[in-house]
Length: 354
Image (cartoon, rainbow, N blue to C red):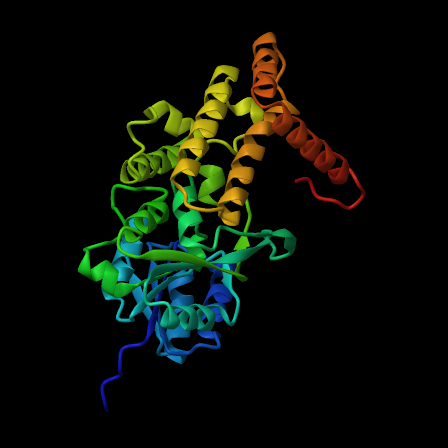
């Protein structure tokens, strides 16, 4: 029997007790319009019937390759086991609770074939709830390399389950998930991949990102934030900005999306001022107008200015509110109106809260 040629794409997924969404995850990859793939699934010590389900499916589809951890090793180490076994030219990620649309891999492969300078490619995302029902809006990150790099200073600019990277770059530079990163391992790896090539996101939403209370982002809390802080510190250093901002300022810049009451008033003011100073420094570096970068700035600034309409009680909070208004009255007025408008819309019948 002739030896099978290596596939073009290796899709990697780790699963722990994932029976609730496992069949859907398997279907969405094995049912892709692009078929030249292998699907490497690492069972990270499941105690339910995940392994039995995987084994039965692998008997019906040879593209499914299985790895079984004898005990729970954690997401980072499990993904590295999958990376070590991958044979494809392109490495794609899939999470068990997210879904890839049928044309996802075909669209990404077509893009990367015409753009050899791009090392890392993601997509936009539809949002769904625990039961798979559509949530309003589309999750988007910047599409162009410059705006992606600027956003990566503070936050991951890729949906992990949409990412596709060139295996040659990982292999040539010895890149893998950092075992020391319990959380934010994707943010860290993509930041290091981008030292060796350009990055992009497709505008089309080609995955469905599930929003539910069991995700790390809602259960890990500050531990996940601290791992992300480590990546941000490195990204500021790579950009030559580490001497311009203290570790505390970078920590606060990463927390622009926290609700107003999550930070003391003094920290919120430090965050606001650091954000304005960062944007001023970066604007001076840019040659020409970048609409995507302007949208990123608006996204971060609007999150910080939510404080102006949801100020926690107390004299210190009120003082900080007035300082933030007086330091940029025009911008403050505009963003207050935006948040008040959203509040009205969210109170309309049948509208979910923003």
